[in-house]
Image (cartoon, rainbow, N blue to C red; front, side, top):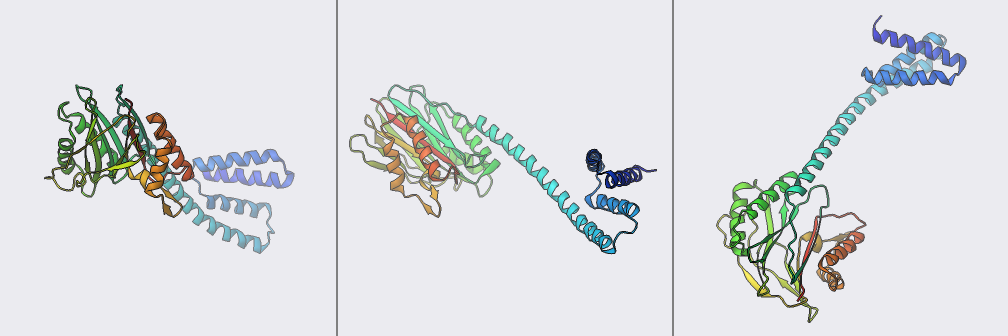
Length: 336
């Protein structure tokens, strides 16, 4: 007797015993039968058919309508079994994909990790939170031998694993620059050639790069199509937009980026951000730029890290704790 025939005979005996005694202990044996059937890849319609054949022997005078109803059920379960198998395959693939994305996200966090510089005259705070597992935003610091600070904030047009590897490539390119060669124009010129040669077609990068001279307290900057950034003046409480013209990285190889500079006074805040901050959506509307700046101003009296944490929490609550885009806000505050 084959294994399936033996299982079927056991099922018939269990059914007959249960109908006679209503003993709940038999239900446990039926449960074990179900588990064995799964291990043997027996489909739901086959189990229904086993039940039908067993019932015919136990109740030979079964009503014809009941017989017909089992035929109906068997056909239904055949379709159900096929659909269930497809669902299980898709579910397993989804779990596998999530696991791979989780590994990639951890790798991205490790690869893109940067150290916030410390300087007596400058307080720096950063908050960067991905809307999903992978972060399309990027920020990075470079410090030269004189203690001057280079800072980059970028956004990849394109998401997921390719964007993460693109950011990693940019980071390692930046770290290869010499300490005395980190002024904004040269950095963006070099990165543009790197991105143009190595990034797949259709993927571009916006970047704002600044260089803070800790002796003269001048801030030099250039932009590759990035979101305008701001300075909040301590004396007047007014915001100044700091922007420079420049194409996105990777659009054209032969591009020379415009460099500008601005004086930073005691108490002033340099505010660098991505469009996940300025294009925050609530229901069907975008938050107005003035509202974003007003919220930043409300926290401006705090330490730099407290500023970015407070602003993030405000917009997180505003969006019901569901970010629709990557959020990166970086604040540099002159102390003296």
